[in-house]
Image (cartoon, rainbow, N blue to C red; front, side, top):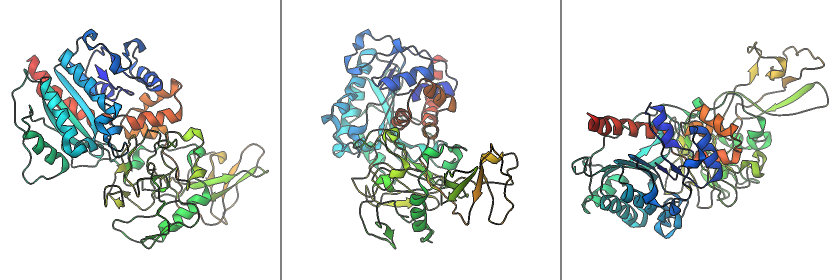
Length: 504
């Protein structure tokens, strides 16, 4: 049984590791997410129980596993941490009521990192006590997607529950000297005599992929930033020669740039920041923020690319070039938020090699981390100030040259000055590089790339797209989802250690 189902990350994880299961029902109220869910999982829409608060839990069919994560915005920084005072926060108790009434053997619950110390820890205390009261032993861990073969820096808390009659109580083992936010939370919960066990969580020590590995090879021009905006950004980047942690600047109206560590304007909103594709992607966002939509960070790749072109009235197209970065991931991109509007507080960009946001304080600063992208999130305020929107991602792509002999002339190959010109004919158009061109350009992540950052198969994306889901909704669905590979690791251990042993 799946609650707050979204597009079905839990179901995708079970499918990917070869688990045969029967879906007895799911609960989702977003009409677009429902369409995507049914398309991806070949599910009958009649299996959707709809609004979880209106479900008669007694009438639900029997099931062994409950999965889901109640809406997390009220516990995140972006949601201003309203917690249980927010109606979305109280939906957690619908999850508890379902456990109490149906008593499945296991559950997996996911939420944002912010709930660990929300309300001085009281929120997590209430949640843990609630799980204990309805008969479950739990373990919890903070897992980062970047350690699960996706280039996204996304930290989420995962709570695993096993019905208390199935296992013995086992007091949590907290590593000596460990003083992170989760360890502090566990130490606090131990004092409440929470029913517990020790789940074998996957190691978090290897970042396996870079953002550039999930980027599409050919991307529509509509995703790219204008040459003028790109050139201004690159100019600032090239002035910085530092190799260590460095904030590289942002795109803003006028001359409001970061220069030698000083900002002429504090209006460096997340929609104006740029990051690097050699690093880890920023959090994917889905939720509309002030009508602008969620956004992620921009990243760069170190290869020359075409920045843009203008079409003259002759058969030869004239191209200009600029340094490459990709524009923010924007859930409401199709609603007027175009790349040309960078600098208006709607985009985020990065451009020094291997850069990602880092918390100097809770919401400030950009740092450097190899091969990781920022988290895909519903609305993540970590940036330069509370007024920032979401981060974006930058990509640099190779210019097509004469060496690419398999390409047709209208494939936009480029020549250096002084080289012989292409033959001009009546049907083909040709790319001509005039003068020197920089190495980068800026663009948004595509919806497919956002699905990849959540470890969904390309086929999953194609099914949702074929169902008629718009780009803006696809962005939102990716940002609201859960990283599939993280769930795969959880299910593998849950099945191996607990489910299989029960059947022996």
